[in-house]
Structure formats: structure tokens, C-alpha cells
Image 1 (tube, rainbow, N blue to C red):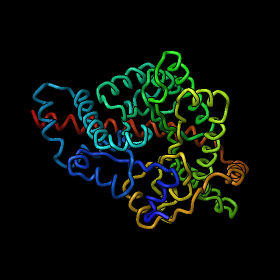
Image 2: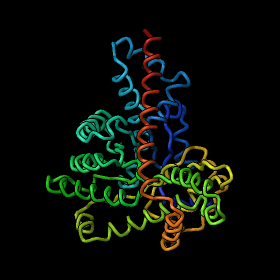
Image 3: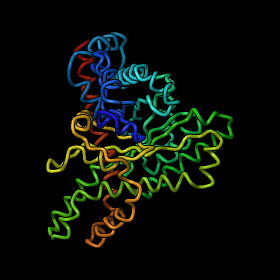
Length: 369
């Protein structure tokens, strides 16, 4: 048995990615230390993370002054700052990327959230980000909206690795896998080496519990309250079943035989929102091989300190998970309505954060001028 819970997760086949990035983490050596001390093998970012990083500290001041002096507008400044961070972090993880054959050592950056319903705009920006960062271990995050499905296919077809984000429903997860496979087929037809293309499907967990638990409390019956904090894990476990089934098909197996990689499920939104729950809940209860768990630093440290890893917590749990969703439906809680709402809110929240990021950088540029 490995000595720490994070090492045990790694041994089980769970890739730990940090859900945070800042210039200070990069320059201080703190990010590199997490590789050796906490078994971290990747990083994810989003507009909220960048907005928080830019709003504090002084590590961006020199670059902001340079951008201001060059006459850069706020859009170009944000593009330059965020891609520089991702490129630098990608260099830190280059050895992990090499050691894992490209599976890990990944650093994700998201297309502008305002493009979530613009397939052509998403495709264009994904290519722009990929070219600017210029690192094979970067990953472009594309939200799993209906319009995003086309963008996923075309971006994969161009040989660009994709982190599909904001997945809440099993139906959409199936569509995301289909979009990935379609992209691989187009890439294969174009003669692109499929082994160089990687993708993860980011399935959100705690937000499902937050929304459904609110509704269960409103119902207030013993039957309803007994289902609190069970929906998110049940939903994610069934997403793993979808993954297993989809990559066992003849279509997927033919692509894998041609050198393609399976699109691993990634558990996102794994920070516990309800203080009455164990702070490692969405790590220990979703521990299973061939997955990624993106953890905020607080969740990562809690897992390292006192996480109890008992092996595969997912396969074999599917009937129980289906029973949870059936019980919610019997109470009148619509799974489809909840997941559609969460996708809509997810895009809206990222747009708010993006606007905060633009405001922060705009103010910094003005001050520098």
C-alpha cells in the first residue's frame, strides 16, 4: 500500500489535476512542488480562476506595463497573460507528459465563455489558443453545449487535444463521446497520428447535489431528505458506465486499434459545498481507474491529509445509482430540467467571471498607462 492517499489514488489509476493556476504558483515553485509532494499530474483553468489570480498580488504587474506600453487592448492583454501562464505551466509538466505518453502533464485553457453557443467562433479560438501556447501538452476546454459538440468534433479533427467541460447529463455525455469519436474518424481520414490526440470529458459533480438538495429540502419528507447528497455521485457513477459502454463498441475499438486514446471521464466541481459532508466525498466515492479528478487546492490537501481510499468505488454501483435517480424522479424532481438549468447557469457564471477578468485587466492597463 502506498504511503499517502494521493499516491493510492494514483496507483488506482486516478490522475490528480489541480483546479487552479496563477503566475505566483508558477514562479514560486509551488506548482512544481505539487508534482512531487501531492502526486499532481495536471492543471485546469477557467475564467473564474484567472479572474481571481489577476485580482491579487503583483506578479502580473511587469507584463501589464509592457502590454500597456505596446498599446494592447484588454482582449489582447488577457489573451497574452493567460496563454503565457498556460505555456509556462505546460513546461513545468513536460516531464509528466513524457513519462505518461501524453495522457497526463496536461494544462487546460478555456475558450471565451461568450462563445459557448457559437461553434465557428469556438473552433477558431481553439486553434488560435493552441497555436499561441505551442505546447503539445496543452488542452483546449470547450463547453458541452449543443453548439459545442460540433466544435469538439472539428477541433479534434484538426489534431488538437480537448477538455470538454460543463457536462451534467448522461445524454450529453453520450453526445460528447460521439463528437469525440467523429473527430477522431476525421483526423484518421486526414492522416493525423491519432495517438497524439487526447481528450477528457469533464462531468460536474457537486453542483448537481447543490441544486437537487435544495429541492429535496423544500419537499421536506423523510424520503426526500434521505436522498440528500446522493444525486451527484450517482450521476457521475452512471457517467462512468456510459464511458465503459461507449468505448467497448466496435466503432470505438476500431479507433483504439488505430492508435486513438479513450476519452477519460474527468470529475469536476469536486469541492464539497455542504459543510456537513466529508470534505473528500467527491474524491473517495468516485475513485476508479481511467479517470481524472480535478481538485481545488483545499480538496487536494484534505485528500492528502485524511482521504480514505478503499479501491474502486464505482464499478458495480450502477444499479444503486439508477435507483437514486429513479427515487428523485418519483418525488417529481426532473433530471432533465435540473441538468439543463445547471448547464445554462454554468455558462452564465463563466461569462460573469470573464467580464470580471476583463474589468480587472482593463483597470490595470489604465493604471499602467
